Length: 256
Image 1 (tube, rainbow, N blue to C red):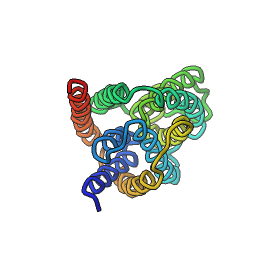
Image 2 (spheres, rainbow, N blue to C red):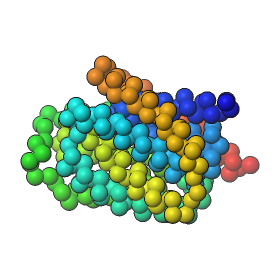
Image 3 (cartoon, rainbow, N blue to C red):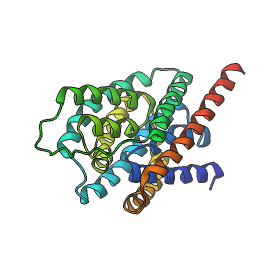
Image 4 (tube, helix red, strand yellow):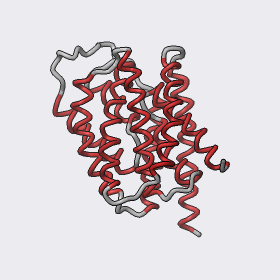
């Protein structure tokens, strides 16, 4: 087996663990891994990332749903809006130069890292599914999050989780679980946007997704074993490092 593929699979495990444990975050590693290690062009790495994230999120969603952590009404409302934004983002991203895509991705990674390092406060009030939701805010936020996700190929969990916790007033465990529903929906939509104009190596992407799914089982198991505060901050620092590598690599290519 090629060494670069072994490294790719190792990172796929990390991606799966992060999705299963945190409801997001690990997905933003997929694009730089697929670009710099696996050797894909960004325009192929981004839809491949969406496929990997989507498949892994479905499995993690099922695991959390069995624990009755998912708020289906809130997630579907947010997810439908995010799907619209993700499809538009995917269509636009397919025609954007690779360097712009990668710098945009680095910017999103920095935002994600700061959010992880700062952490999110556990909501004191649990939102009953029967309570009326701030529907307009949720729809607008969903479209914006989906647009960013589809454009740069990130699952968007690092944006979805705080949005659900703040706007829908979900406790952190429910926000994490429900984010997986939204990620699944918008990843499918963003992938559809790219698939209309971009060819994928389906066999490779699905094999990486299979390894990420294994990681998601580990992440789900860890979710009931350890607090995520320290892990989230550590992962945030790691993501900042990856963002720095992306910026440096793209800057070198521009200057060379």
